[in-house]
Image (cartoon, rainbow, N blue to C red; front, side, top):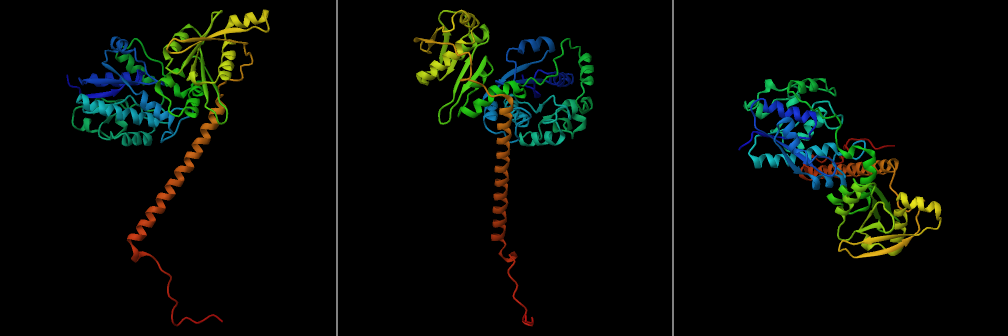
Amino acid sequence: MSIDGVLLFSGGLDSILAALLLQEQGLNIRCLHYVSPFFGSPRARSRWKQLYGLDVEIADAGPEMVRLVKDWPEHGFGKVMNPCVDCKITLLRLAKVRMEELGGSFIATGEVLGQRPMSQRRDIMNLIRHQAGVDDLLLRPLCAKHLDPTPCELSGLVDRERLLDLHGRGRQEQLNLARHYGLTEIPSPGGGCLLTERENARHYWPLRKYRERPTVEDFRLANCGRQLWHAEEGTTACWMVVARNNRDNERLRAFAAADDLLAGLCDYPGPIALLRDGCRWPGDLLERACSQFVSYAPRVTQAMEQDSVLEVRVWLKRADASQSVLSVRPDTERTFFARPDWEEVRAEKHALASRREEERKAERQLLREARQKAWLESHPDRVSTQAEPAHDAKPRS
């Protein structure tokens, strides 16, 4: 069955209303819900169908989002690590490809002019539309009457008179519209992107800093448990993740890759740990990591109250199921492996932003000089030369 258009569907109230508004006109809309380590609800499709009657397709944007976060996004990060402008450009490019595959005529979003300070100003919305290559395709139904008509409106496919003129950060009009459609469950207004939260930035930033090519799975792992790093000048940074609960234990087992080590307690209940690329760590580093790891087990700390020189046996397991045992004394200081605090991350981010801006200024200056040189070479008759002194000019005394 052919479709009329696709809609970027976050699962928030605005995208729900935009979809329903278009469906109310009898249009066949395919909602595209992109997921990544930072946003998305891959298992909510049936729930959205039941609640709102929407046809939602789950699509993977993980590799594209990881590249944005690892590289310096062209339009920079927001207050934390959120590349909002570049993210929207990327999702629109992906949606354009999918729209063409499905035979649609336009792309819609739930954006409201003036709702978000970084990505929903008029100038930025125009920039996003242009750089995504969707100038003649992008429809924003909730605020369409504040914007120029799009080809799908001019053609009559979409009735512009039935679109809306929402503006600003208030939600009352959206709530009224939700009641009009009889929505029994209204999503909270939070953005839902983990990159906007400082706590998550503390987990993600070391991946940018220490791993040359972090993967989608690396960033998914960074959403799990206690994130701990050890880095020394001239050496490879070491990454250890310690579970906080049984759910984390299961997730760490699932995340373990070929060169990783899983660590656990031989004689006590407690968490497990994942040592990323731990098979390559030297023995003294493994011992320090295990010493700190066992200190997170409550039963071990209780036992230390009775035995201050307690030694704890730790099993280390490879992906091939081979296993070894190491005896360590708990490191209750927990200083060898640590994670950066937000102020450290912010300072490094600002330093990189300043450096990037200087590089861009230098690039622009070189481009101006090259253009000027090319113009002078192509217009030799316009090049000013030093004027000859007049013959009747009197010599200076």
